[in-house]
Image (cartoon, rainbow, N blue to C red):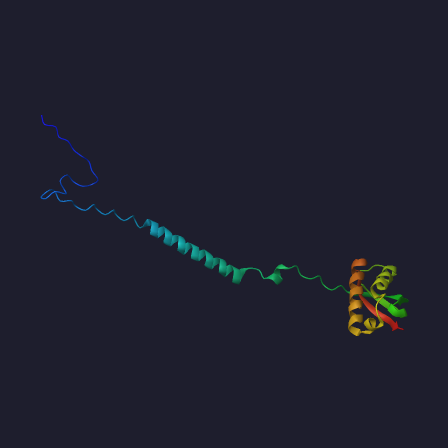
Length: 171
């Protein structure tokens, strides 16, 4: 019995290289992958664009503005009585002095007149040691008065809403 022997090679048929031998056919081209990958990419890109457009629309049209997000300012309290503080002499630089008298505008919520000692103490600390030129400037005077009013608003816990200068003499 004859034995048949086969050789498995790199894709070439037996006798393909010989004259008159079997002709090789080119290897079939692999089939292209289904279009599902390109469709997935397309859906992903379209979804991303829609998501970005929705985020941009919210940012520019629907988000709360900065002013609305901040708490509203407290309403200005009603004015109450005015408490006059005795004038005090304050030392300035170069041997000069300032005679300072002021009144405190109390709120309507202040049940009793506060002790003016803290107000005098803050006025002394704020106005003392300045030059006559500095104290005489109207802009500086107004700035110091407003600063004193802010300090006294904190000291008297909202019972003082303003300061009026009633005596302001330098020498």
